Length: 284
Image (cartoon, rainbow, N blue to C red; front, side):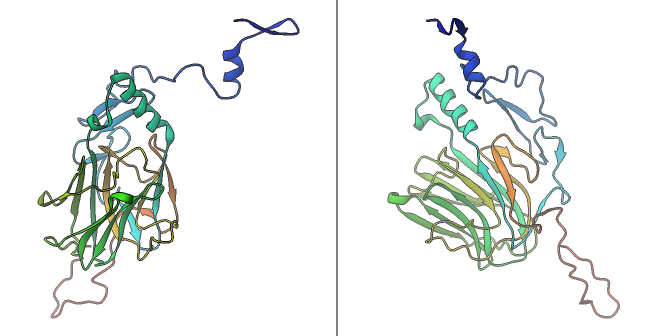
């Protein structure tokens, strides 16, 4: 069909493009052909963007950074780092599922891995929010406490009491949700399996992912104390989330200037706790 106004032919695709609408689905051609991921990282083609899955010890968009105390995120309990998940990666997933004929049950499990350290016994490590359902990881009496609210499917709470995490040492928390089964694991041991429907913390309905606290929102959610400590890395849906800059998956927002890069703990030797001339060495 041809269109013309006052005898002047119109090209519909040009009119759409002038308003930011395209007559095709943008494609990042050759997303992985140049092997952009460094240090043994695996490149995943997500149609309009690429993702590098880094091996342990590396982070960054292209796995170009070594994970050290200098690349860690530091929080003091008053600020948060919020990730607002973008719509375009969600559309890419739905498009890929449609083209490949995948069903929701065939989608790979949701995963979340966090490496952190703290000397606090209480606080909110992270919070994942849908419109109403949510997942929260808190510190309670020096242990990790898991909370999941899946709406009509119910609320679940579990405490991982086998590992005390308020000792200032690095600890790694792993969550994997596969159907109605959810795995909680600390430091590659002490697994805890929940055989109950929980909120899909890695699903397409997730709106925000917050480190260090709970954003203002539904009245039934009490914000409470934030997280005071450091996070070495956060691996969400198999991808290391950055602590600064831009990202194809989410928009980053710091709520306070106290949210900083670099893990430097309090000076525990300032009070001269060692007697008889012994030297104090701070272990963070």
